[in-house]
Length: 321
Image 1 (tube, rainbow, N blue to C red):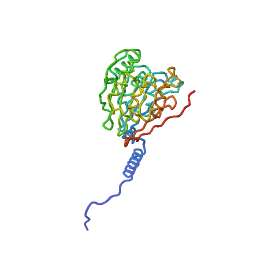
Image 2 (image 1 turned 90 degrees about the vertical axis):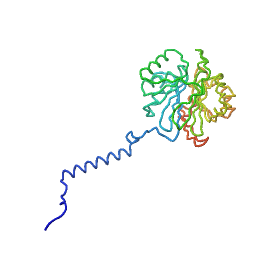
Image 3 (image 1 turned 90 degrees about the horizontal axis):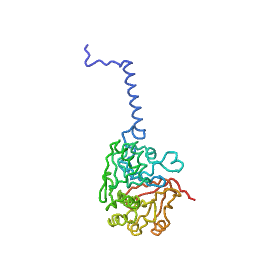
Image 4 (image 1 turned 120 degrees about the horizontal axis):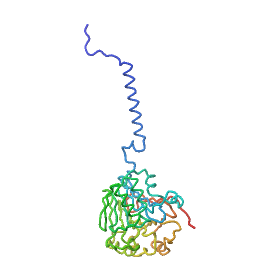
């Protein structure tokens, strides 16, 4: 009697063990992939349907971190560079530490709005410690000790440097629109006020919500920005020059028409910022004010589906003496 086909043989015990071991390992890897925070690095944890802007409490200075819906990160100014010990005493952030806490590995762009120490020197350790693609800066340099350190840090890391002026559109992602509104006319002097007026002003739009980042500009530059007319209307404004009286130019703020204003300022600072005149103006215009000295870090989240699709959260509410 003939038998047809291939005679079936049972697997050997050793082969069975190998197959079972492989299946167990594969199952472990699949579960690790599914339940890990960022799919073992396959997903960008910074991707979000919202535009997020953190106005960072760096004391008497300016700094904000912008995280785009598609996972890019941009830092605008960095406050003054102080030691960790001094920052802790002052109850303020260091921007490079803040970015580390956000688990950000790469900075797509840094903006130096102007060359005053309280606004840009904190960016030096950030550039030294992070992968920074580009620096956007005002065309007017201001040579000082910190500028030379900044310049050296950029050269050592081969960071691309780009000078920008009013009208430039920055390619920060096709999901948002970013335009430079100042400087238009370079005042070109080492005088404190003129360095402020040469500062970079950014208009950031995501969906139907606009944010105006005004650096430290004063009335002369505010008059220049007004030339963009209705285009500067924004729901949120980063108040220029820490709320100084010299920047409280009423026609500018009326045209912007912001519902919410953020003042970056140090607690009990020697300049008396924000000024009574500025605060009175903002109250008259019906603007709600957030302050880093009273609220710590201020977190803006923008959905942009309509003109009211945004929210603001703060770290705390502090009553100053």
